[in-house]
Amino acid sequence: MKKTTVGILAALAAVTAASGASAQICAGFPTGDRQFTFGANLLFPEGAEAGDIWGVEVSYNAQGPLGFFGGVTFFDDGEDSEQSFGAGVAWELVSLGAMIGPSVSACPVVSFEYLDIDGFGSALAVPVGVGFGTNLSAGPGFSLSPYIIPAVIFSQFNPDDDLFPGADSESDTNFGIDGGVLLGFGTFFIGGTIQHVFQDDADPTFGIRAGIRL
Image (cartoon, rainbow, N blue to C red; front, side, top):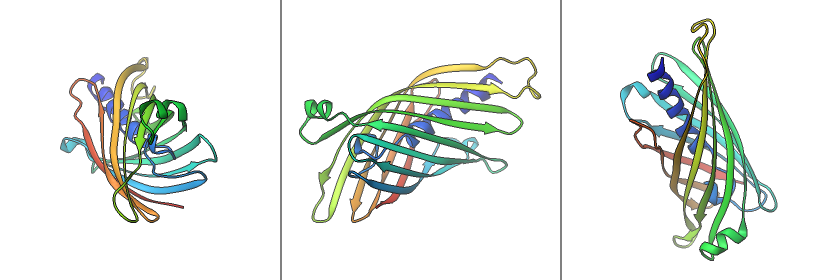
C-alpha cells in the first residue's frame, strides 16, 4: 500500500498547489478589488496510470488585502472517477511586495484539499506558502501576469478500515512550487501552469487554465 499511498499524496499535493490560486496575482489570479473569477483547468500528469486531472475554480478578491478561493478537481484513470474539494485564503502584504519591486504583489496563501476514495481511504493536503506575481502590459487591452507560489505541503492519508483493518494513517511533508503565466484580455484570461512537488520519483506537472473575471 505504501507505493500507492505515496502516489495519491503526491498527486493531491500537486493539485492543491495548483488549486491554491487566490484573487490576487501573487496567488494566481489577475483581478482587482471586489472582482470574481470563474474558470477551469486541465493538468497533464506524466504516465498513463495517472489518468486525466481537470477542475473548476472560483475566487473572490475582497476590498482590501483578503482573497478567497475554492474549487473541485476530478481524477479519471479510465476506470474510476474521484473528486477532491478544496478552499483557501490569501492575504496580500503590500509592504513585502514593495520591498521586491514597485509592481510586485506578495501574499501568504493557506489552503486545503480533501479527497475521499471509495473503498480505499481519504487524503488531505494543506499547503502553506507565500506567492509572488506581477501584472505587465502586453499591448493595448492585453496584460501578462507571471506568478510563482512556493509552499510547504502537509499531507495525510487515512486508509479505509474495512479494506485495511488496523492500518495506521500515513503523514508526509514536502516542498512544492506552483507557477504560471496568464494572458489577460478584456474579461478573459488564459495561460499555462507548472507544478512540482519535490518528492522521490515525482515529475513536474504541466497544465492550462482559462477563465473570466467579473
